[in-house]
Length: 83
Length: 83
Length: 151
Length: 151
Image (tube, rainbow over all chains, first blue to last red; front, side, top):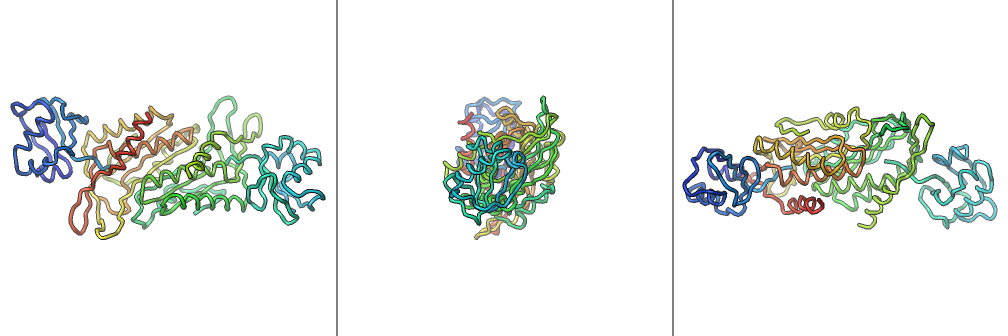
């Protein structure tokens, strides 16, 4: 699984991307966010207010119940501010 | 009084402007339009469907009951099609 | 600012100039009207715009002042051409600059709707059948009326 | 057409190109977003735009396709910059060309509202207090939602 972080999530976590083997017991977006927060440090800080965080799986915005597989590109970021 | 004609009113009447002494008995826009139509020829043709015609007195759009004086600039034209 | 002129205008230069040096401007909205030839049985080879010199400038200035009264604009511009134009030629430019995107967009829309029905211009088209005066559209009256009701 | 780029763009050239040679186009509407510095206690010396390469292009293409589905457009364009910009610099251009003025204006408004909330861009401002991430505005969500309801 490829993980991407943007904006202040990237800054707090400390890197823009990483490769990760799907952790045991993680099946959906909610599970992945919980697992990442459980890593502590920058992850815990970045994901403290997890409700504001948005997620895209394979470049599509998804909800918390979206399934996650080991071949996915998962991006985590704050609300967008383009334009 | 200075009279100005625009667009198809100008074409039908045959000239773009003329000077006119305020005709006896003409006090308002409605009276002036009636008087001009009464001249016949191009005037009668241009003012046949008098309801569609618009009038400006001294460069302000006015209604049919607007008073007319001998020092006015009176413009007569069809609905505008700018932009 | 308003201008009534025969000559064409340079969109890039006009829009750049509108917000130049004013760092409070967050958005510039613009509309450009072009001479259209829809093809069909009566192709338009030219469009001639007639106007009422003096009154045109006065009405455009009034329209612009009304937009500035309704929305917080940093700058606004109306350039309207007259004379003989050909399909694809620019007729009119309206542009608005504001700190706020919504204000710039709404004021630009207002200006073009309003000047369609309120500025003393008349169009005639050259077609194979001869000169044809363009009729006022009831949709244009309806569009301008909408802004009166929202006042 | 959509483009995501570091470089600035030439408004005049982009807008001229949009309708070039298509005589059915009666109106071109556009909106340009600029880097704003409102002054105040925390002046902005620079704005950095981060985006999600690949997904950005995909979302912009979707937004553009949606506008073309809703309105009869002859052409449309979104150019969005990323990287480090300064106050007064152009961030984004959206432009629409249509035979009909209302379609061009509405589609342009839709595109800028929609991309504000739907395209994966993030802004951070350089201020004397340091970097500050620009927060999403609830007004922007409301503006985008309006188009969903009108669908």
